[in-house]
Every structure is written in structure tokens, then in C-alpha cells.
Amino acid sequence: MANQLTIALAKGRILDETLPLLARAGIEPADDLSSSRKLVFATSEPDIKLVLIRSADVPTYVQYGAADIGVAGKDVLAEHGGDGLYESVDLGIAPCRMMTAGFEGKALPRFGLRVATKYPRLTRKFFLEQGRQVELIKLYGSMELAPIVGLADVIVDLVDTGNTLRANGLAPLQHIMDISSRLIVNRASLKTKNEAVKRLVERIEQAVEGDD
Ligand code: PRP
Image (tube, rainbow, N blue to C red):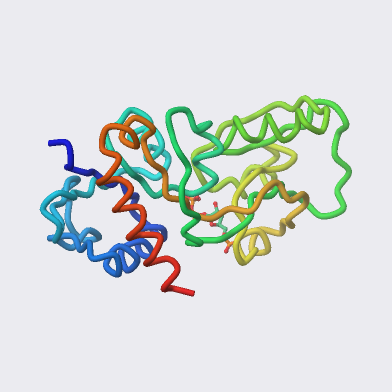
């Protein structure tokens, strides 16, 4: 149906902060998302359903129109590249920084710097812009371990309080970008379901503004 809308969300901190926002926009899931094993959820709005996926997959679902709208961190958006997506409201959720990190004061090799990250695309871009070619090591989590065991010279990861770095004897080094969660919209849905998409985005925008 032309007015049916699917919103893609990911479990974790983003979800915990997005649900109250959606509730203020009048959209409440029919089940408890955090305890259910289901992946598709009806909402209080008959025309709106939610799908629950891995955070790194949200841009892909929205890119291909499997979801019309999604909530994704700027980190996964930058890594995805943004094809087929319109980046809408900054929800101000889960703010943190993308940083390089390593041992403070340790001399780093000018050539052949080894960088461990789960963000290879944006990491390569960041170092290329500095005129540096680096050896990328793709990891899926716990990046802080890599410098400790000598797998990498530095890491590229999200830093919020800095506690995880400190707990592992590491320090933030270079700031790459500020991160927060964004509302993203499938570009085709913007045309084919224009009215419904616009109305929903406006409701969420109002909920964000009401949050200030
Ligand atoms: C994130 C990030 C850091 C940590 C930073 O990990 O990858 O490890 O939080 O937060 P802090 O500066 O407040 O310590 P997350 O817990 O999301 O798990 P992940 O390793 O799966 O990314």
C-alpha cells in the first residue's frame, strides 16, 4: 500500500533513546522490542511498522527500500557511503566522537601504520586525506585490544566517556568526526510515498524539537 511505512531500528543505546522519541511522535510498538525475538513489529499506527536489525545494516535496508525510514549513527552512515539515502534530521541521540586512539606519546611509523577498525572505508578516507597510506585491519568489536597485543599501532573507534580507552591504557589521539544518530529516508520513498514520508518526518522532527 502506498501509505504503508516501515521504520528500521537497531537494538542498543540508539533504540533506547529512539523509542521515547517515537512515542512522543505518537508511534508505539505493539510489543516490547527489547525482550521480543521478533524482527517485525506492528505499532499504534496501522500504517507504520518497525523492523529491528543490526545497526550497521540500517542504511542498507533503507538504501534498497526494504525500509522507508531508519535511524542510524553517523558512523555507520559514513561507512555505508549514503547511496540511495536522504539524510534528514539529526536526532541528537547517542552523541560521541570518532577518534584514532593508541598509546599516548608512542612514536608511530611514518609508513605502514597499522590501523584496526570496524570502519575501514571512513578510516582509509581519513588517512588518505592526510596523504597517508595505512594498512587496515578489519575487526568487529573490542578494538582496544589490538594495540595492546601488537595487532595494530592505532585504532579508529567511537569514544564517548573515554573510559574504555583509559581502562586499557590507551588515549584518544586524532578527532575524525562528531557522531550522533540521524533519521535517514529512502530516496525513492521520498517520491512515491511523499505525503506519508513527509508527515512522519515532520512528526519526528517535532518530537526532537520538543525534547530541547
Ligand atoms: C563503544 C566503542 C567503544 C566504547 C566507547 O563500544 O566501540 O568501545 O563504546 O565508549 P566510552 O568512551 O564511553 O568508553 P560498544 O559498547 O558500543 O560496543 P562495540 O565494541 O560492540 O562497538
